[in-house]
Image 1 (cartoon, one colour):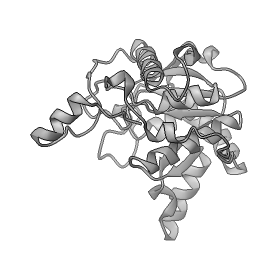
Image 2 (image 1 turned 90 degrees about the vertical axis):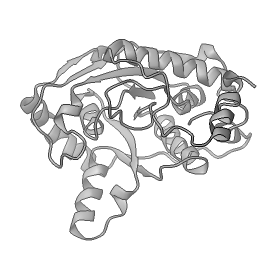
Image 3 (image 1 turned 60 degrees about the horizontal axis):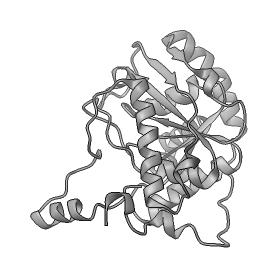
Length: 264
């Protein structure tokens, strides 16, 4: 088996005839209020260099696939986008108690976040299904194909969940290149700083020509095309590997080379 034929995955398992479509995730009034206030204030303070907004369709499902440098990326993208954007966030932000938990839950809900459990297997598929629900409701959905933040500034290999979403829903993919967001809120920093930031939206990518969502080869090829689009905008050094802890032990390393598993 080659990496392009990565075998049956959770994404394949979701492709069963008669599966119920995931429920649409709605944006409440708090989202519109906070966006209406926060967006003009943030743009006035940070004066970000934003280009390519004409590439973002005014309506209909669209995936914003971005590089990931900082926690603040999930605030920057919705504020830079001319249309509302939703994204996934770890459910810890929504399950806290007391006043601090209320503030966290209210803020993340207001900026368009949808809480999900992070992980592999069923948790990964549940996250993809949540994104699918957003897209099938005709909304814009932001995702980081690298899976997690790049701590060294390099662009890591994309996971195929972004391709599964695009192929499954028919949504076009708009690549996004973020530059400088790691300087606004470096790892460990509690409060954002005023630093120059650039947000570049690229031309829409239609990945349907690669094949069906059930094909591992199609998902891999579509993901690689999307990552190339992100790289053209961000100009980051390419890491050439996934952003994850390397397998430990001789057998684990050998298995990962001989039969690479698909990263969702």
